[in-house]
Length: 260
Image (cartoon, rainbow, N blue to C red):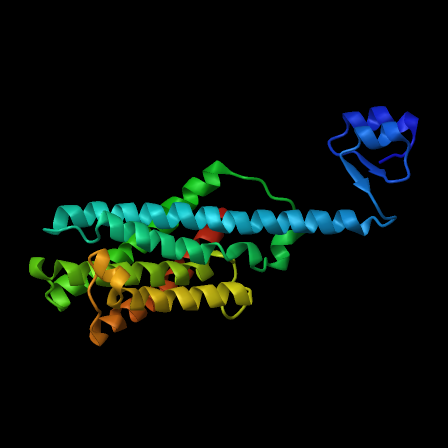
């Protein structure tokens, strides 16, 4: 920090040079930050906001790598075991669009106070570990849905459109519930609540995912209206996923002493 001519070399060589609006011109030119008010709390607020932004960014990145990895695994396994694709390319694009819209609410989310207490860095190794833990977990429940539809409801090749529709809606609902699991190291809905914006987006898009198959758009991409009995699968399996994912999260934190 400095406001005089003699402070210019230090401001230049420092990682972050801070000056004030009333400083000499050379000090202001070499500083990275110029305070417009005589209040150092501005710096504290900036640091906290930076950590909050980084935390919300990591939520999005870790959700993307884990869910996408899990979905790739599911499609690969299903392509080998099923006589038809569990979801078509256009359906997959629309599905991804829906839960991506839900994830766009994350910049407005809360970040746990514990997370803000110390600086964080992007760790590629941590991303890999997270992907390999949470990706197969979500894939396991995709395969559970496939098994229920194939063996429980006997949806075979003639019912491919209905099979794809159920997984389309399930995928959106499951990922939006998974969003609440991943966004905090605590127990969601009990120890840590997301912002109202995240809740509204999650609920609204889950409802839309269930209703889209009955619309003109759903018909255009090969979806069919969902009979009520299959909606129970779309709702109950994600709840089961939520419970199991909490156990996986607890094990991950115990093993690696981190989450986001």
